[in-house]
Length: 199
View 1 (cartoon, rainbow, N blue to C red):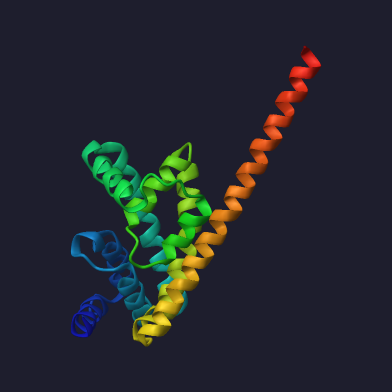
View 2 (cartoon, rainbow, N blue to C red):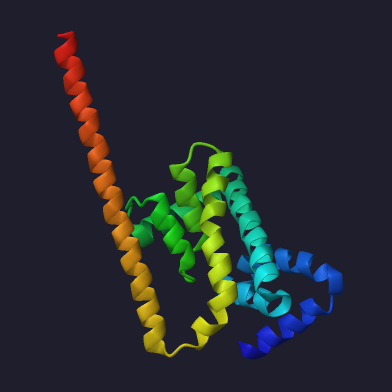
């Protein structure tokens, strides 16, 4: 893996001013090349520095989100495969936008699967892209800055990191349930008031 990363870095760096465009293109080709998001973002940090690397990764991941939207809406078979994967991984469990954003930070959660969740939660492409891009800021920044360090941590530090992310995910889920229960309670109260008022 280290040899491959070194070769890829040299290959991209050899393109000079064209390298940023090639790097963004690498983000789009990443699923076909079976490259993890964290690896591509780390390479961006090494080649372009933190700020430019994070910005280019954000652009690349945002374009990948748009590609996900097009694939799901234009190709029914792709949507069907993603739906099957969703049922296998989450067993029809509903998650909030906040939870999707936290799952975006986890390097081994399927990118297109999370995009499908966001599509089901939003009403339009504009709204989908807004939440999608908002959720891509942290992964682009964290992976670019700390991606390489995370991969070099001892196994117990890596495990602790993922347990911490899982804990945040569960807390956001509980907060979402409380908020939903409160909203349903308010609707019921208003409905009772209207029934009493009119009848």
